[in-house]
Image 1 (tube, rainbow, N blue to C red):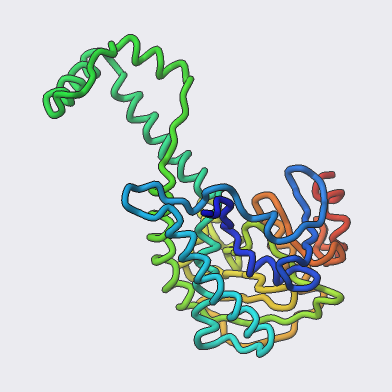
Image 2 (tube, rainbow, N blue to C red; image 1 turned 180 degrees about the vertical axis):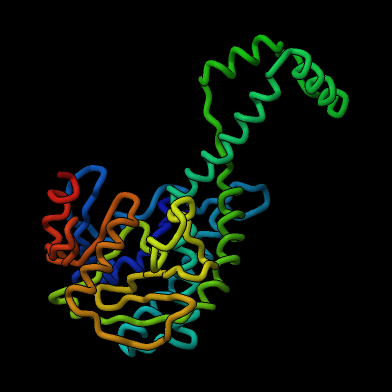
Length: 314
């Protein structure tokens, strides 16, 4: 039977934040939209139906899902190796940077953003086409000449009424989303490899790193020095930016173009700061091995995770 529930957030990644590091181990989940907390296994979050399905004649619809599953097996071994050795180099580094690229680009929210962008362009073009009857009829005539089978029975008045009613939705094919995601992954991978990466360690028993449904955090290192127009638009290829990625409840990576590679211990205050970055970058959900993780409040106070909803929804 073909699997239809596809994960955009790899289970092999999520299980690194569970209590027991297994697929059946549980995550503590904080859902900011639903304003609730609960526990569940990695399989039950970070996935939706047919996310990787390809509906093209002559192509196995499960092709991409199968390929991603094969890669995730390699990623699981790399994550385990890094956790045991603390050595971020060689094949381990290559696989994990590929995992970061994969997670950074692929999500339902990014697809909706792209759909909305294309829908806006389509509506603007249609509005121009319907600016007046003469323009509409000239375009219909040209299309009919190029494609005699084109149905030109819809009048200008009918088309304009339908357009102005907004009783429609504009969709983008899943296969187009998948194609664009692969293009973007190929674009950002060299930019990830071009950064220096610092591996940070913590004691997960007392101060774990947390993750989210959008765990690749790209930020300006000194946002106050960036013109307001560009402050919310850091790019993977721009100097002065930093990529933060929580690898597991014990480990995290920070990459920038100006920094140095190495390994360092992170104290509770620093871990709390990084956890706060994750919280401000999420789409909907935050994941942790327990609600006892630490984060910074609005005035930079140190709080435990069981205070998150009460503080950020107050």
